[in-house]
Image 1 (cartoon, rainbow over the protein chains, first blue to last red):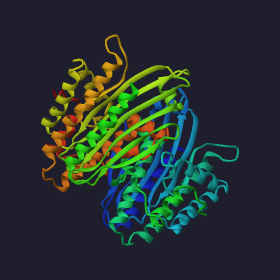
Image 2 (cartoon, rainbow over the protein chains, first blue to last red):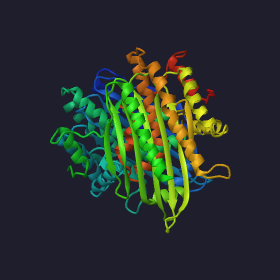
Image 3 (tube, chains in turn green, red):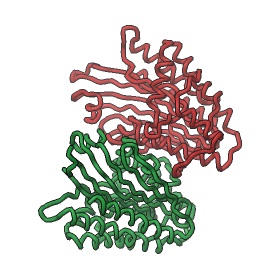
Image 4 (tube, each protein chain N blue to C red):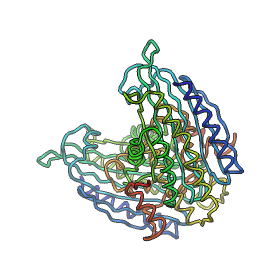
Length: 300
Length: 300
C-alpha cells in the first residue's frame, strides 16, 4: 500500500501545482527537496506573490525509521519502526473574496521488529476558510465532498463533515476556523472495508480537491476589493495562525519533533493583522461570516 | 502582601501608561474593565496607531477563587483557593529601529480550607526584542536590569538573565526571541529572604522598567526607515507570534482556562508577515541580528 499511495500523492502534487499555476497565470511553484536525518524526506512546493495566490504550499513527504518518542507517547506504543507519507496543502489567495483552502491526505504504517506491518491507516480531509461568505461556494465545496464520500459509504459525509467542524475549531475564540469540509483519521481495515477500499476512498477525496476549489477561485478572483476588505482578510488570517499554532496537532507535532520547520509553517499566511478587541459592524458582511462560524451549518 | 502589591501594580500601570502616552504624543490608552466569572477581574489598557506605538497593552488583573483544574495539575496540588495579581505589558513600536518590549510582575497566593496562606510567591521579568541590533541599547537595558538586581543580591542578575535566555527561546527555530533581560518565578520565602524582601526586589525591577526602555525609544524613534526595514520587522514579529502561541506558558494557560482572550492576545503584533524560507543577505544588518539570537550574549 505504501508504494501505490506514495506514487499517487506524487502525481497528485504534480496535477495540483500545474493546475494552480495555470489559474494564477503569473507565479510558479518553487520546489525544495529535503531529507530527514532519521530517514526519508520531502518535496516542498511553494508559490508566492502571484496574480491570484499570495502564498501557498503543496508539499509531499515520505518519512520512515524508528518511531520518535513523542509519537510513541501519542500513539501509546513502545519502540517501533514506522513509515508515513502524505500530501499537505494550504493556499492563501490575495483577493479577500477567494477563500483559503487546506487539504491533507496521508498514510501511516507501523512495523514489528521483524518488519511485518502491525498497524496501518489513512487520514486526511479538506476544508475551506472564507473571509466573506458566499453560501453558493460553501455549498459547492461540500457538495463535491459529499459526492466523493457517497461513492464509498453514505455515512461518510455526515460523519467526516462533523469531525471537520469539531477539529477545525478555535476553542479559545469559540468559533470555527472556516466553513469546514471533511476530516478523517485512523481509517483502518474493518469487516466491511479492506485497506484497498480505504485507499480508494482517500484517493477519491484527493481527486475531488481541484473540482471542489478551483471553480470557487474562478468565480471570485476578479471581484474588486478595498483596503477595508483586505484588512478584514488579514485579521481573519490571524485566527488561522492562532488555530495552526495553538490547536493543530499536525503543526505542533512537527514543531516538537524537529520536522522541517519551513515546510510545516508554509501554512501561515503572508500578511496578517491583530487588532485589539475588533468587532465588525452590526449587519455587515463581516459580521455575517462570524455568525456562521459560531455554529456549524449543514451546507448540503 | 496581596493588598500592597496590588496597589503597587495599579500605580505602576498609571505611571507606565502616562509616560508612554507622553512619549507617543498622539495616541491615548483605551481602558477596558473586565470581570472574571470565577472571581476578580482586570483593567486592560491598550494603545493603537500612535506616532510611536503601533500597538501595545499594559494590563493589570487580580483574580481569585477556586484554583482551576488545569492550574491544580500544573502546580500538582489538590482543591485549593487562590489569589493572583499582576501587571503584564507588551509594546510594539511602529519604527523598526525601536525594539518591542515585554514585562510582567506578578504575585500568587494559595490557601487551605481555613483560608490560611499555604504558599505564596512572586514572579516576573522584562525582556527586549529588537529588529535591528544596537549593542548600545541591549547594554543599556541589561545594565538597568543588573543595577536593580544588584541592590538585592549580586547573584540575581546572572541567574535571572540566564533564565530569561532559556525561557524566551523559540526552540523550533533554535533562536532567541530577543536579547533577553530578566525572568524569575516562584520567588518564595527563604532563610535569608522574607516575602517583604521579595516584594522589595520585584517592585525594584518594576520601577526600573521605564528607565530601561524609554531612553531606547527616544534614541531610535525618529530614525528614517524604508519598506524593506518594515518588512523585516514584520517577519520578525512572526517569530514573536510563534513564541507566544507555541511556547509561552502564560499565553497558553490563559487560552486554555477561559482567560479574557483580548487581554491575553493584546501581546500579538498589529502587522505580521510570514515568508517561505526567508533568509537575510549575508553581511546585512538583518543577518547580524540573527547571529546574536543564535547564542546568548553577556551584555553587561
